[in-house]
Image (cartoon, rainbow, N blue to C red; front, top):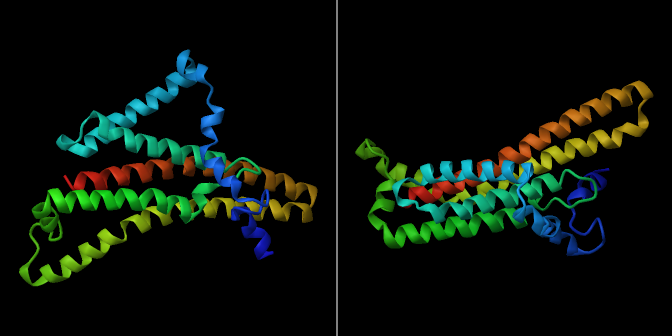
Length: 224
């Protein structure tokens, strides 16, 4: 039972090949060129979201940020959001439920922020290790605590997204597996519960992509 339950997260369990990682870029094939050329209500809605995110990320980055610096975080949000939503459809591989993808997104970003900060703003990075107003006797401990919290940032970013995706898919899989053994009335309630859980998972897909992008923006603003 345990093998069947977690087989939905196995990259080679759907088609027998590792090609289902290509579902990460499936959006590039699904978006026709007419979507970008002719205005529509979906285009206007998506552009409104991107414009709102651009303004918010620009505020988070502060005076050091410029117009182009927000695009990487908006692209990151769009990629994660699309993959989260695609994973809610049947027989589509959820790439964001694997640390292979989430850590690949988080680790290079964090590493580039750290390298940029320590090379160009060394004094600021040292000062960031000791919060203002810290007593002298606690400074060595604060340096250790801040250093550890800095090092585990890419891990927490990746694990948070992965754990949330896995948890929701496991619940949907468990509910789906118990359906055949239930009576007609119980299946009706089970179906209502699955629909409610699917709506909740849609909200989680949006929230987690937003949290990932916002935290990445905050980590970037700290090194400037």
